Length: 95
Image (cartoon, rainbow, N blue to C red; front, side, top):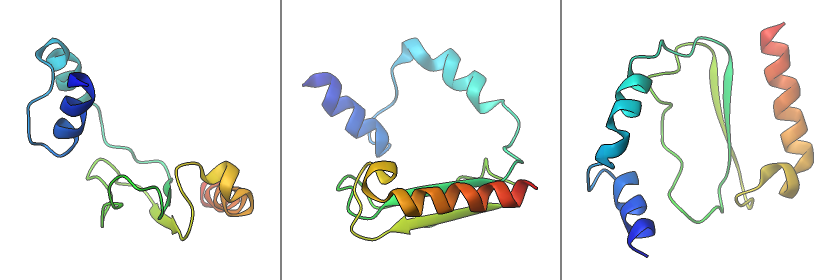
């Protein structure tokens, strides 16, 4: 239970991360921005936290966020046509 609670608190920036992973966190922060086309496909009814209103500053290339109404954690299974359309649209951006 302690690990789960800490994970939730860390996700909301209420507590620091595990010091054992600080080197990894710093290495990830030094990575270059993501310049390739990217899409964030999320179910609106996932029940955890609301989707962020804007993408991470790490994404500097074409980016789109799609929120699927009445869909939970698993868009490929719960909304296969929406998922397939998103993949096709993303592939078209890269062409």
